[in-house]
Length: 248
Image (tube, rainbow, N blue to C red; front, side, top):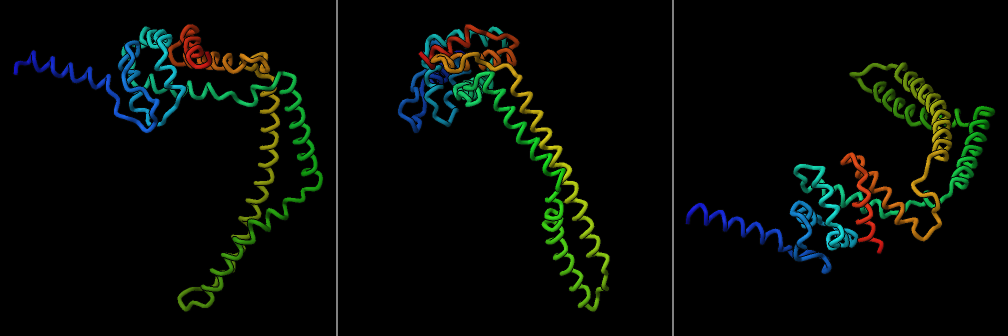
C-alpha cells in the first residue's frame, strides 16, 4: 500500500472516530458529532464520564458555534482542556447560589446580625473567660495521663530511671497550647466579622434577584468573567449563546 493510500486510510479512520461515540450509560448522550462542533470540543465531550444534560444542550445547539469560533480566534490551538474548563464553568454557573437571592439591603442586615452576635461573644469571653480552665483540662488531661503511664512504666522497669520532669513538661505544654487556642479564637471571630462586613459591601452579579430572568443573568455574567479571565475578553456574544442554549 502506498504512503498516499495509507494516509487516506488513517484520515478516514480519524474522521470515523470523531463521529462515532462509544455508547454511554445515559441514552440521551450524543452518538454523532454535529457538524458545527469542532474536534477539540467533541473529544472532550466523549471523554467526559459524568452525564450532564446541560453539556448535551450546548453541544447540540447550533447557536453555540459562535462560542467555539470565539475561543478559536483567541487560542491558536485550543484543545480538550479548553473545552473541559468551559464545561465545568457552565455547570457551576448554572447553580444559582442562595446568597445571590439577597438584595443589597438584605445582605447588610445579615452582616449586621452576624457582627452583633460576634461582638457579644467576644465581650462575654473577655469578661469572664470561662473557657480557659476547661480548655486546659481538656488538653492537659489526656496528655498528663499519657505522661503518667510512661512515668509508671519507667519506674517499674529495671532498665529505666524515674523522671518526674516528663509529667511536668507535658502539663506545661498543654497549658500553653490551651491559652494560645483561646487567644486565637478571638482573632478568628474578629476575622469572620470583618469578612461579613466586606461581603455586605461587595457588588452582586445581579441587581434584582427576584426577577424571573435572574438565573440567566447570573449565568451570563459568570461566563463573561470566565472568558475575561481565560481569554482576556468578556465575549458577550458567546456568553449569550450559551445562555440561549440552556435557558430558552
